[in-house]
Image: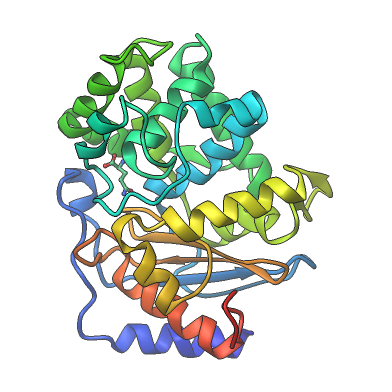
Length: 306
Ligand code: GLN
């Protein structure tokens, strides 16, 4: 495993086209695109890393996997009255389908869906309390108390988040929100701004590769059925309008973020986190996807076969 990922990291370092860092969140535009990390966490507790696996980055939309998991735990299946389970085929920040579907977002991984999930999780609590719960949950999953929100990134998102505010106010106009729109947006922007490294992220995702059980603690985070379903949503919706392409090239459930991170799950085998800040045109990590494509072909771990 170590030599597989060393090879991948070496190949990525030589890649001439590293993609373009997200610029619509000014704080993310400052990140050096010449960085790459990969970590592979196995259910037996072994973890292998290559590249800058100790460098933290903004997990952005990868956080939506954890907020969905939390929402399922709090609300159970009733969360599906707030958000659908179909790929959208539209960009992550698109508003178009919301009007046709009466303010119900297509899935929990597009921005509108994650904002609706944030509203559902809050249940009348202040953003601070909900954020403390989200961060605590991620620390528990990663078995690492040092994980925090990057306040600079959060502020940068609040200051430039007019599109997300539009999505939220549009949904609220259908009478769907339980909390104030500003409180929900505050919660959403801050959970997107959680900073982690690939070592922590791969560890945090391990329950999804291990039938819902976090092997570092032995606790069941979710039932095997729920883990399977979260993986299904990651596969079909985790890369927005690039989900089909990601399934075609990589063949693993995966969730990307505009910070350049991707969490990918090889069910029964491993949780893999990659990070490279340069993005493709859709907003998914360019080298991260290439690295996972190589990884899946070298290991034969695609869910669709060798
Ligand atoms: N916080 C980002 C946003 O709301 C998340 C988008 C992403 O990672 N795709 O735009």
